[in-house]
Image 1 (cartoon, rainbow, N blue to C red):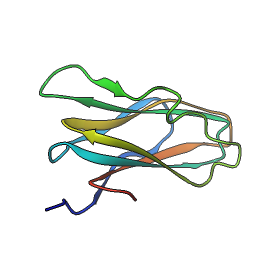
Image 2 (cartoon, rainbow, N blue to C red):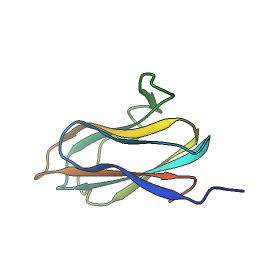
Image 3 (spheres, rainbow, N blue to C red):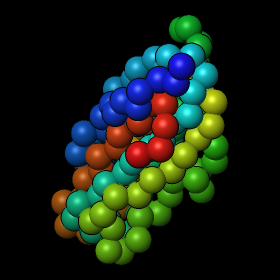
Length: 113
């Protein structure tokens, strides 16, 4: 039986480099990350990270997976990651340019947004 998709906000209108809130997956499952920018940043880099137990956080994918918001970035962008297990969070690495830019990031557990 498949899990019902469930959204979790990890980054909530972050304005500078920050670790988002974390949450455990329900076993290996597909994750979809939804990012929304306001203030039209000229650059933004967000990472999806995971860890098992109390180990170190490690990046899933590469910096280019969720990087560089376009100039008209007051919109949503979706990124998918298959079969992730453990504790997960989003990390805002950089956000630059624009007028008071913010980044909100949600993780959807168990399916496509």
